[in-house]
Length: 606
Image (tube, rainbow, N blue to C red; front, side):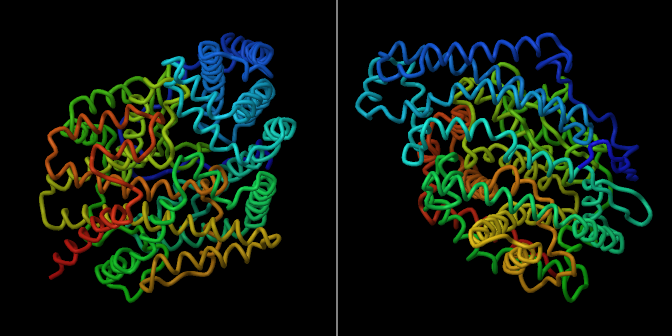
């Protein structure tokens, strides 16, 4: 797209004037600005450090003793830290305004330079994977500091059966900036530049989607139909993006002899395929007692024979339309965190006063929300699009949980701090649960308690049922793409098949809903990422049950789990709580909590 094209106008919501002083990022903890001499210096140093690293170690790893290998890994970690700082700054600055041509160019140029510089590092994992197991174990036995990095080696060696030649691996690394990364950028810029006309007002995607939670059913319908119109007008481009990325993945997977499209994600998550399959099967089997049952209740509350897609996240008739100010949201979440443990609130507090959160909705800003860990010697940054809805408070609790987790895990160092996706949602979903429980305990009336409980059920259905439906959509998409190009109609049919199955008979689907796969960024940026949300929700439900049982050491065990980052496997991290994700009953325990909430809602019926 033309990045100089006119962006959507800034949203004009009734709540916008009453939200309070919304914080914006101060990225100076990374660099003072794009022209900072330190940024240019670090790019130059990165190139030199990568070249020096390759000159010192390429072709020599098999001959290193344990102490020399430790020095090698520590040097590699320093390089990863430098590259991470550069890309964090360029990426965060870009996401503040993805339609700004200068920011897009700055990110692209930084990405190109970092990719070129780090191509010389590709040899490390390739050579490590050619060393036999006995030699690797001798390294760990010979140096305790190196043994701490065993999980790094384990992750490298998990790719051992799928490794290509050195030349091909370097080519794939070099080519990435004009491959998947380029298509990702095209997707981001297209989505950020979409303009929606809702009842005569120009809106961006985020504020148009926000209308789907409005009390006014006519407004919800108008927004849904406008989303369908704009998605439909752009569906060919989105189909091209998905076809290209799925085909590119299929080619690489075929060369690597990956047994399934999902294999690389499972490997990066350090989770066994059978564990993911058990989760998926348990959730799909539970559709009737979860989403189907809840949405039937909701249709009755709303006085409807059937729900339309614009009713899925609609507020309940008795729900207040009160705007939650930023200060209220901050106070609620910090109090909930502090009730659990004062240390959790202490770790969260700096996000609010130090420019670590970017909250306002702005033209060109990326939609949604995320927490980016940056690098271990700085701090995470959180992005929100805060509109003062009760669910925005839960989003704040969610992303702040990520931030706390990332701060705690930073002590592991750059290479061991990153948590596999299967556990990366633990602290975020736990933070949501803490906030929900506090709000529920303070609900002043039966109606407000019902609204809170229904909102939590809907959030859990969105986290578990909807994300597993997304996962099934991706599985079907990648499988179908192996048979040839997929038309927009083909993609729409795949989308509708999982939507109808997961949402159930309470729904009627408008014409155009078959295009709503187009805007989901996870399908583009992180194939098969979405099951991590369901994994995290199920895990947290099981964890919270242990907490409610009164384990006096729960807080200590919980913080130790978060501090571990990516240094330990999920089985080891869950064992102190008496939990095992490999046990099929584990997932049913989590799903039973959602079902129990729906039981409570049914009991409130007159």
